[in-house]
Image (tube, rainbow, N blue to C red; front, side):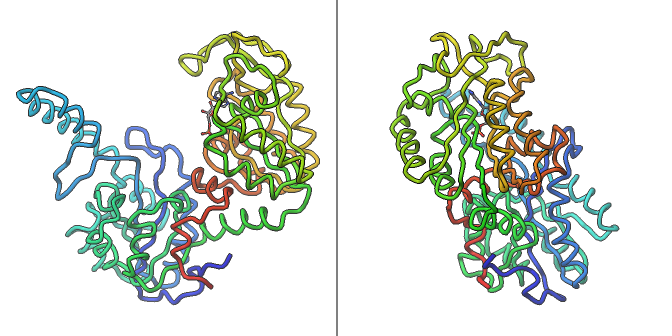
Length: 436
Ligand code: AMP
């Protein structure tokens, strides 16, 4: 890792603005999964123990913007209002705003501050605004080793809009900027990159979570113990074009499952019935099949598939399925999971691997009847001694729900960010930090 971390700078007595990812799942104001809070604790504790004044900031969900306690309509609502005859607009606007006022409370970080305060021995306060009077007062009152969490960054449209004035206010809370939000490291927002890019802070480093994510993933990509097996699944080929191309260069074997496999099967001349196919990516798939051959890499596709007559609606509806060979998918059926022969094939490849990266489910795993392929892959990964890296998002959720979390070497905290990293892209939240 070529970026400076909090270990490389003096933080004693300094205001450290730490961008964390506290975008935790919540139900009725109760946090339902604390993984992201726990992920940020090593950095926060280190800064506290080393006498920093810790100012934490994060986003939570996609709320309406709130300025000086005035809530504005979001884009969709504005459009809906404008589409109405003039005499109906005011009433509709008032209705939306009333709802927004209730909704906005769902996006407050207060429950996170309360939980953090319990975890950190009562050293945490909460600012009821992001860069307003309360935030300023609470930041100014911080003593060494104390922590304040600012209210949801996305209540201010300056966050996603990279507004200079907003960045300046954030920067006034900051002698040392620390990014530890891997989940948003692929976004270029005020708190994730712009505050540094605008030259508003001199010292910008990463925390332990980003350091760990980058070190584990970069090591596996650049110096893998071989054989290196990459497993890709999920919905569409189009979403993972660069990941496929980049991983093919690095791995020894590439397994493709999930919805994206059918475009590859179609490219190979199979009929795939009503399965998900990106027709304009057929040529790309052929290029990748050729690239694998030219590079001497093994590319594995499903040899059988679980088919249904229609996509389940609702997604977890009870459905009738049958298993057919990939060469024999009926015209009126769609493939929604890998079949049992494919599970065996993939298992054997996984068994041989010494480094394994997995991103994307093998089927529509939201439905228990179509989750078998994804579960089997998760189980095989849990059983190997290989270094196993789960690239966030759905695969991480699947592994955690199945209780295999502690059997994996690393589960990324950022779905989008890990995918962009696997594509070989620079992450704005990382590239803005000081080099070692
Ligand atoms: P992604 O966000 O690209 O990782 O895709 C995850 C989504 O892909 C999940 O919601 C799955 O239900 C969906 N998916 C997986 N396999 C299939 C398939 N064979 N057909 C349609 N959708 C699928």
